[in-house]
Image (cartoon, rainbow, N blue to C red; front, side, top):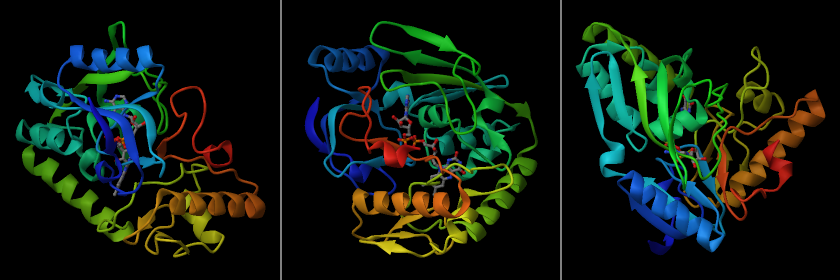
Length: 299
Ligand SMILES: Cc1cc2nc3c(=O)[nH]c(=O)nc-3n(C[C@H](O)[C@H](O)[C@H](O)COP(=O)(O)OP(=O)(O)OC[C@H]3O[C@@H](n4cnc5c(N)ncnc54)[C@H](O)[C@@H]3O)c2cc1C
């Protein structure tokens, strides 16, 4: 375990403070050792994937953070099933699926996270999401390891029923035989749509809010209240897509939180819609029954 390890640089936004304890873990035993340390010391516990939907408090996280590596980030393909460690990147999984001529995972081409983060978030894009392809995931806590299917994981629109202290160490993803050229064509189309619509060359943390209604995107709502391009400190509501917040260079997490507060209150005042955040938070008391940031942001 290392102490006081900066987490901001492990996130795509690049903001936030340090974890009190941090370790890279490469086996289920190591995950459980870290979980037990947290329990014994009465500290909160969390996993960090690629930090691509995560805001870390500027004051840091006063507990234990682990990142899954080694055996827990491996990917293999057998038959129509892709087996991946929770720490494997979705990009590597997609690459291996394409090499094996297995389709159904193309939606992951623009999601810069891990398998574990993808299960936690039920990540998805362009009509595909983890729930459609996930057979089961191995979830570990301090005492046990248990395979859960997508119903047991409670996968819904950008959420699961996982809580900090439940670690996705492995997943099995069921795909279908598809020609490599077909897979490549779908990926190219999705990537060009993504590039046209979203800020792909800026530091962001993905979607800020969940879409409030099937027919109303969160970005449309934030844009409608005049906040596209609005800045606070070093953070800016993306001029390209109002459901993203960009780090203009020297943003603090608090700058992004301020923009989140402002967007939520304006949309509520003008449309009566309470936007719910999609981005996940790590900070004082998260994972210990308390909340960070305060409830006015979480929705
Ligand atoms: C440019 C950009 C575009 C994006 N586009 C999309 C998109 O189209 N669709 C979409 O759904 N998302 C998108 N995202 C958001 C993000 O990539 C996904 O939510 C992704 O699934 C997060 O994975 P991660 O590994 O980075 O998780 P992190 O951000 O590191 O963590 C997210 C949550 O998952 C938990 N977690 C991570 N790993 C594990 C594990 N092994 N076990 C238990 N809990 C775990 C963390 O504790 C945290 O609560 C985008 C992000 C960016 C920056």
